[in-house]
Length: 147
Image 1: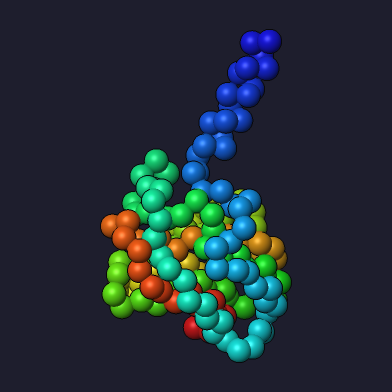
Image 2 (image 1 turned 180 degrees about the vertical axis):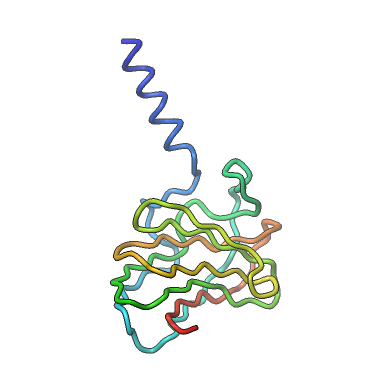
């Protein structure tokens, strides 16, 4: 019984490492793109921000529980960049890649974040668009293979 409780506690700790639930339906939809997709860039209007602090994950800023957007990507030799265009707020990106790794970025282009995968994997990219201060802000999610 002690062994079962210990294993259960480890699972809960591992699952609690990120408060974001990548299994929830994305708030602003999803898209399937293959290498060489057109038109490039792909754009989607979203609202950045949320009520969940990223401080427990060692980052800063606030995001929602559910992903804002899901990208299903089939790679083919191109670099993949996920970025935010917004001139009114300090936005950030949190991406869960197909291999389960997490990627965070803030302020790559002024106050706008970008995450670039030089050798992107095939599969699902869960994307959260947050804000530094927890306020909500209109933003544009951009997915591109262009430099």
